[in-house]
Each structure stands twice: as C-alpha cells, then as structure tokens.
Image (cartoon, rainbow, N blue to C red; front, top):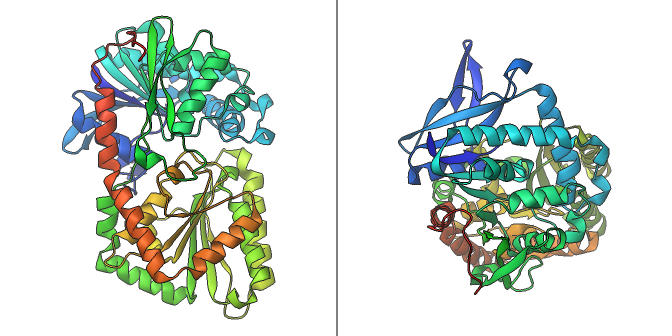
Length: 503
C-alpha cells in the first residue's frame, strides 16, 4: 500500500525493447512534468506512480503488476492501469485532444463535440480512480495531474473519504463563458471541487476556475482572497491578478486553490551550457548557419503554439526589410505529434507549406531563411542551440506555462557575460514572471514584426542587463523551489474535507 501516489497518464520512464526484453530508460530532458514529479518521491515514504499501458481487451481496467525504479537513491513503485487501443484512441486522441484541449485554450472553432465519447472518458477515469483506491493506504495523499483525468477526484472521494486528494492543472483554465461550452461542465467541476487542493500556474487560471465554479455549481462560495506574491505581478502582464480566490466551499467541504508556476532545473542546464563541449557545439552551429542573427523557435505541431502566425510575421519581416535577407536565419523545431493524433494533420500541412513557400520566395544560392525540423532534440543538443541563438522566439497563442523560455534563460544567463533576447507571447503563463522579456501580441503580424525588429536591433548591453535580471528570477524560483513549495502544500496538516473558516 502506498502513502503518496502520483496519478498521471504517462509513465515516468521510456520503455524500449532490447534483445527481446523491456528496458527502462530515464527521459532525455531533466525538465518537464515527468522529471519534476519524480523529484517529489524523496519527500514521501511508500511512493507509487500510477499511469496507463495498452493491453489486450481481457486486461482492460486491470491493475498490472508493479515495476520499480530508483529516484534519488529511493526505490518507487510504478503501476499501470490496462487500457485497450480503442479506449486510448477515444479517451486521449479524440475526447481530450479534439474536444477538451480546444476549449482550454479558447479555440472554439476547433471544438469537436461529435468526436467526443464521454462515456469512454468516464470509463478511463473510473479505471484510474479504482486503481488509486486499491493501492492507497489509509490517509494517503493522491496527487492527480491534468485535464484528461478531471473525473478521477470525484470517483476517489466517493469511495475513499479518508484520503487527501490534490490536483495540478498544467494547461490554462478558461473563463466561464468559454468553459461553459463544454456540455459536461458541471460533472467536471463537481469532481474537481471534491479535491482538497488544486494547483495552477497563473493567478488568472485559479480565478477563472473559481468563477466557473460560482457560475455552474450552487452553492460554491469564495472563502478567502490571497494577495499574489510580487514576482507574479509584473507590470502590464495579461494574465496577472493581484488577488485571486484561494478557497471554495461546497457544503462542509473546502478546496484550496494554489498558484505555483513550475520551474526548471537551472543547475543542470547551467552545467551543460557552460561545458566546453556545448560551447564548441554552439560555435560550430553559428559557423555552419552563417547568419549574423540566429533566431530559434522551439515547440511542437499544435495550433495553440502559434507557429503559423510566427512564420507569417517572419515572412512580413523579410518583405519589409531587404537588408535582413541573407543576414538572419530562423531555426524552427516543431516536434510532430504522436501517431494517432489526427486533429493536428492540417496544422502540420499548413506549417510545412508555409516554410516551403517562404524558403522558395527568399532563398539564394548561399542563404535559406528557415531551417525547419520536426524530430525532437536531445537535451544537450538543445542547450547547444540555445547557446547559439541570439533570439528565442516563443509566441504561442495560448500556453499554460512554457518551460522552453525558462530553459533559454537558464542557459544564456549562466554565461560569464549573459546575452540573448527572449521574445515572448503575452498569452504564455510564464510571461507573468519574466518582465524583462520582450512581450508581443501573437495574433498581430504587425506587433510581432515590430518586436522581432526590436530584438534584432537590441544593443548587447541592454540584452545582457535584461538576461541577468531574468536569470536571477528563474534561478530563485527553479524546480527545487517549486518542489519545496508544493511539498509544503501537499503536507498541509488540514484533514480531508474539513471546513476552512472565512477570513
């Protein structure tokens, strides 16, 4: 039986077959959700990670035998809920990606109600909840992650009133008029309100959740208002809230809302960024690319990432500024989606068409304006690219947080002479922490052209001053600080389901 359980749809390792036998490997990058969550097991005894695994039909819903892995010298158990190919396709690729994801990111035109099978979504969430109840010791803490497991808290609470249930929402949480488009809004909110704690990356997301709860669940009343810490109140930031609802009560049960933006492993990134091999890689890249200004964009194929809008702005820049042709190069890594996610097929085709069109229009015998690839990079290689890039152009149309921007700051700010310019969308959760970045409006080609021109023309001294300030903040609020904060919240002594007095 486990005292601390992380419930997340993905496994905490990469499983490959070598010589006919399964081999478990660590993720390539120390950043992201998986490495961050693994670090929590050092603070809790008897930890277990619960994920899914594809199985034949007879094993669907079954709790598969445990595997063990070592994290920070401590062995933790990993168990999987068996899901069929049909359930995975319906629950993850269709309902989650085609129906829920668009609403979370405020893309109503992408909402595909007819692709959703809410019955199968419920079934998968119920399987996860039943498995968590089976492995949870008396009074255990069960920590559930992300929107595709929205219904798990409600199913657990109905069966195990003794456990503490926490949830972390890694995506944006939309305003009530947007969330209300989901026909299952009440069921989702009732489940989440059965948690003891819910974490968000930005104050606006927490306040949006509170507003949705008040709009669609009666009664759900605000108990307290908390002033947001100073670092989350950067001037003019779109997602900034000076106060947010920190607790909601339904009957005698209270759920606390926390704002805790995740950080990156600054120490690991700095060690790689300052290593002679990485420095040599960066110099080789600059020589190979042969551009005075290298612009890097790192993301994946997804309409939320704003890659199409960025490419159109870059095209407009080259049309406007003939003097930049041959002197700048945009390097775009946009990782292809997992096989089975068909909702992004048109996005990928559009991006590839645009890249081809721009390169066709502006290329010369010795210069191609865009270098584009869809295969993921290894961690060390990516840090080398960060070091080579004069500008990091990250302008999603919506993004819950975005760790790439913090990785770039950690790499460039660790140098003896910090440099590099971060060009950042107003609609990215991390923007509330990174005031010294150049912020731009990703829906406006004109705004982005002006911003990239400013980034290209920025004097080295100004870039260094900005990057130094960014690095100090990202270092102060790194992954270790985030872990320490969330561990304290998860170990809060308040008993499950107890009432919090209004302040």
